[in-house]
Image (cartoon, rainbow, N blue to C red; front, side, top):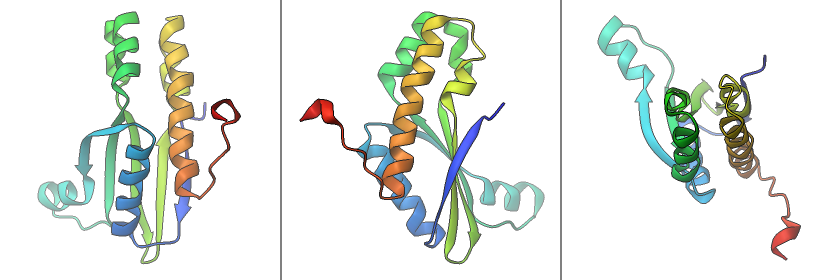
Length: 139
């Protein structure tokens, strides 16, 4: 099962992290958590790793639909986005595939939310790569 997809951005980590935050916001999502894995490894294991963040992205209305359909499916939230330094001018951005993850629930509505959430996450990815599909329904 494929549970994630991603892109590489030709820019330094800090710039890419800012760009991801902006793209998430522009698509109507919010970042509800941010884990600085690099700092955790340094503080807990005295290990130095390249910059690595786990962002928890959320669309509150979609989260509400999930929890109303199956309160335990809240364990599948939020949608995680990994931002990690590959090199000095190259950053990887990996997105959890909400459709694949929400398919763990047997509730039809939870799976439907997974499809809707995937569209939002794909829109964030497309915004990062400069691909903005034209929505003909808005014209």
